[in-house]
Figure 1 (cartoon, helix red, strand yellow):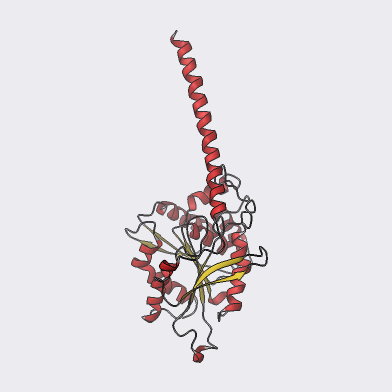
Figure 2: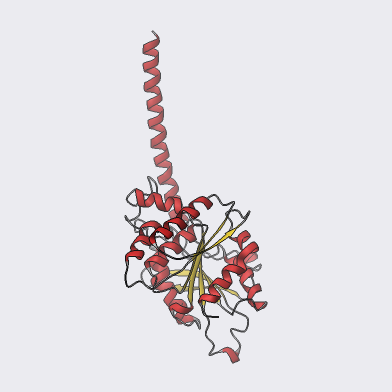
Amino acid sequence: MKYPCLLLAFFLSFGTTSSFAQKSKLSGKAKLQAQLESHRWTSPLPEARAKALPQNVRHATFRSPSMEVDVGYYVLLPDGYDLPKNKKKKYPVVYHLHGGRPGAESKSVSLAWFVLKAMRAGKIQPTLYVFPNGGPMSWYNFPQAENGLGEDVFVKELIPSIDATYRTFGTRAKRGIQGFSQGGRGTTRIMFKYPELFGSTAPGGSGYEPEEKIRDNEGAESGAIKFAPGYDAWSLAKVYAKRKDAPPIKPMLWVGTKGFNYEYNLKYMKYLDKLGIPYENLIVPEAPHSAKIIYEKKGLDLMQFHDRNFGF
């Protein structure tokens, strides 16, 4: 009689496993749908929290020509930007891409304090720092979602709008990009896809493990999330390395040794070595997966990296 019992247990177990897999798949789709529905292209901080930002930080919007919706961002303006004596002065600009999903320009904007402190101490040159909204999938083009082309909105719409609205140089030589976590992933993909746009690049705390998974699974990050094949940090680096006409870039990869993806950042550095792509690294001892803590410990090194690339 024990064999029928074993068979029954097997089929019950199989049914439970199958049911669990179906529920997991459904929960993944439900989670994705909730994420997409929660995204807003304009998402400023609540007034009480916004008061904690430096007065030099402003929230603004521009009208997206492709989506016909307003897109929000924060911008840190250097001291004296609005003074009449500086009305013809131009400034370099750094774009900081936030982490997490979905996108929101309010994420990471508190880093502006570190930048402003460094400028006021004369440790870096006056520079605009822009904190954009990454879209529903944070810096990915995800056409499955309504208004889901986060990369295109950033590269093709926000950057031209910033150059038209503020006194930036509007040149590759004076334009930088950095980001952390999801923003590090986005920075890596974008810097290799559009090397002609950025003279200074610095992806931080990047999730190179899921990027590798996307590469190895024909664009699939999970059962619910699928991007175009080749749309990942590993594949785009390889494509860049083969381009004979590509403008040279030498990114700084920054990561804390206590970050959960520290080892994969080291693995990605070895991959860049293999491809012959030069880089610098900023490895911060004992720092967890936190842009704020890394900035507290070594943020000046990162800011001065951009300064050097801008020719200061």
